[in-house]
Length: 265
Image 1: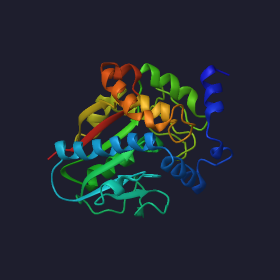
Image 2: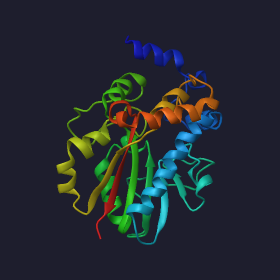
Image 3: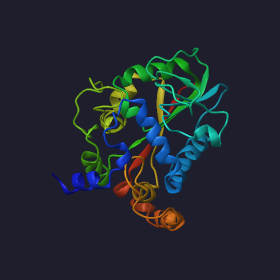
Image 4: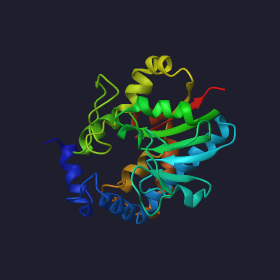
């Protein structure tokens, strides 16, 4: 067993022991952990603010703004106009929505936001077809996903027993469920390694931005949703300042990145 594997087991939040990753119990426990971690809350607020700022920068037109794969999200607490959805029902969400087969009208959506959900889609092509169908011309989708830099790749390969990080997966589709067996490198495969294929197969969707997020220190130190915090939350401003100083190294140390898609007018 690698050192990282041993560390991940030692630091794992005990409340998650024995919890089925495909169960409703996981959402409940993750929600409890999220609400107890101010530093983790700030990281997600950064994600939500980025989604809205990016929407305002790149997207246009009327229509709903929908969060997909929301899980434990508190997005709509900051932006009440957001419709928060997931494939499973949850008390903090507005409705159930399958991102691969959405019961939404054609050309009715201005924006979709997905945080750490795309790599759980076993059929990404079905998702892209739904984007083409439901987005208004000029509307778009912001995806925030596990990054593929040297530090992130090493970590994600050893962090979870229920997910993998395989940049060599040949096909986009997989036999995994929505949670168990998901490949955290799927966004790299589709939007970086196979970008030319994506652009050929889905010419109505353009990639307008790929950006590494600058909150990796706080995400790691907070323990995320699965591990114990390494430092108290009152140190968050100091850590954020260090992230700012070391932002030129984001592509080395970054843990998440954003992919911004837009439907061509």
